[in-house]
Image (cartoon, rainbow over all chains, first blue to last red; front, top):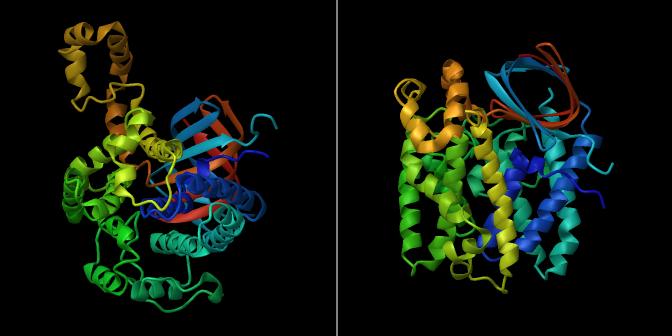
Length: 107
Length: 338
C-alpha cells in the first residue's frame, strides 16, 4: 500500500479533524489507535481528492525571501506574493510554501 | 471563483474518510454514533473556520442550534445570512469573541460541546489568559478529574492559538504566554515515556477500555509533530541566527563578542560573525515569523529550478490558506526573484 504525506494534516481540514479526534479521545469515546487510523485515511482521501478532483491552476509570483531544502522538503517564504487563478487574483504580504517531493521515494 | 470548489472538495473528503473508517470503528467496537459525532464535529469546525463558501444555511444552523444542517441538503449557495451570522468561533481568525453567540449556543448544548468551548475562548485575547489560568489550576488540583480533560484540550488549544494568532496581536501573546507556553512543555515536551505520566491521560480520562500507552504516545507524537511544525514554521528564518536572543544584534556584535565567545564557545561566535552582516533582515524576519502560519501553501513540488536570482517552481496538489480563505490547485507555477 502506498504511503501518503501527512503534510495536509496541517491544513484547515486536517487541523479540524485532529481537533475533533482529540476531543473524542479526551472524552474516552475512541482510542488513539483508532484516531491514527482515521488520520491515515484522511491522508489518503485528501491526497486523492487533490490529485483527481481539483482542476484549478494557479500562478504565483513574488519575491523569494527565504528558501530551504531539507529532508526532501522545500520551504519558501515569499514576500508580496500574488496568486492568479483562472478567474481570480489574490495577494498577500507574505506567504510560506511547504512542498514535499511529488515523486515519493520508491516510486 | 477558485474558492468555490473548496467546499465541494472538503465535503467529498469528509464523506470519503467517514465512509472508509466505518470498518475501523466497527473493528474497535466503537458505536457508529461516535463516528457520526466525529463527522458532525469535523464539519462544524470547517464551517466555523469560514475558509470556504459554505451555504449560509449551514452557518446559521450551527449558530442557532449548535449543530450543522447536513451538508448534502443544501445544494446551492444561500443568499441570506448577516455578516456575523457565523462568527461565534472562527477559530483561526476571530479575535473577537461574540459572547451572546456563545451563551446562546451553550445553553442549547451545554454537554455536547463542552470540549469545544475552550477553542472559542482560545482565540479571544482577554479570555485566553483567564482560561489558561483556570486550566492550569484544574490540572494542579488532582480532584477535578472531569474538567481536566477539557482543560487539557484548552491548553493545547491555547498553545496552538498562540502560534496561529500571534501575528497581529501582541497582547494575546503576552496574555497567553503562561498557558500557551506551558501547554507544549507539559504536554508535548520531553521524552515520550514521560508524556502519559505528566498530563495524566489515564487518570483524567475515564476511558471505557484500557488504552495502551504506546498508542497514546504515538498520538501525542503526531500532535507534537504538528505543533513543532508550527514552531518550525515560525523559526525558519531564525535558524541561522542567534535564534533566542530577543536583544538587538548590535549588542551581541559590539559588546557581547568576548562574552559570547567565553560563554558559548567558538561555534556560537562563528554564527554571530556570519549573522552580523544580516542585522537588518533579522529584524524584518522577526516580523515575518509572526505571520507564517497565517498564510501558507501545503503542496508537492515537481520541479524547482534556479537561474541566477530567478526561481521557477512547478507545484501541484496544493492547499493554500490566504487571508483566511482556503484555495486549492492541481497545478501551480511559481516565479520568484530572490
